[in-house]
Length: 423
Image (cartoon, rainbow, N blue to C red; front, side):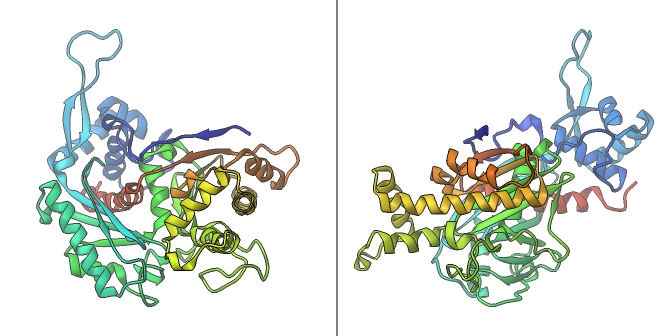
């Protein structure tokens, strides 16, 4: 099959191209107050003329004029000189765009080895970013709150904005996250279970906070800033410390009935198999994630435990040996690749996406998307003659997770500013 190897950083779309899902047609993919829908269309377009906005929303020019007047009156959008129309004379038409200074949001990724954060304006432009290294073990709630406060203060200072103008904060972390309730049911980053992290972050930082699973936020980054902006349905599979999955259906993020769906890493690929860090056996990530590869490397390569090598150092050594022809190292990668093929085939058989995006730091290891892995994936798809979806690979930088968290915060901020009950 044809594999698209797209190596880029999230948010490389030109600023004038806007951010957020690109809706097609007359707005049937979205619902809500017309003012909110108009605001979203302006934001996704970057800039748009009134006549084009009316056509996109399938409403009369008079209706658009009234809605735009409200948005201009609340300083949520502003008028700018639009591009000249082909063959037209005179001055270019006036266009509309989101006024970035109307407010700011913070997106934050809470992780095992380091936290990352970005501060963006309402147009989705990143104004500042920051990173905070931390111990790898799970931290107390107090420790996580202190770290989050330090990082949020850092990006606010770097951006040179007032804290009072920060409208919302989105935060993501690995594990089982109840997004609507703001609860961390379990995470490798945080001690305890059923922790009301969203409300505690809101209180500690003085900024309304929403939380979600980190892979959902990676998926939002694709939906808002990346390849998924114009796709109706796609899946994102991430391979790092664990294996995660996000799913977009009808240009909306799917979370499941209890906000706990799509735990691809904990689907079973071998009954009574290798022990997973979730406590069960035979999970996909017990064969393909960082800790699985490190475990296999220590056994197969007979690494000296006295060297106290970090997981990253072990992974790099394993990869270097495989490239140099070490058969034991190659066999570890081959086995992980076969399990990855089975996992991807399961995604296709269940959801039939038009696009699968592979993301995460482990994309530097080509065993996860080598030609033989893609061939085996195709062989495991049910349905003779069925066309496999396009598979794209993105080797993102660290900030993509935080940018997805910022997208979550931008959704909330749009509700606050454009208003759910407006026109």
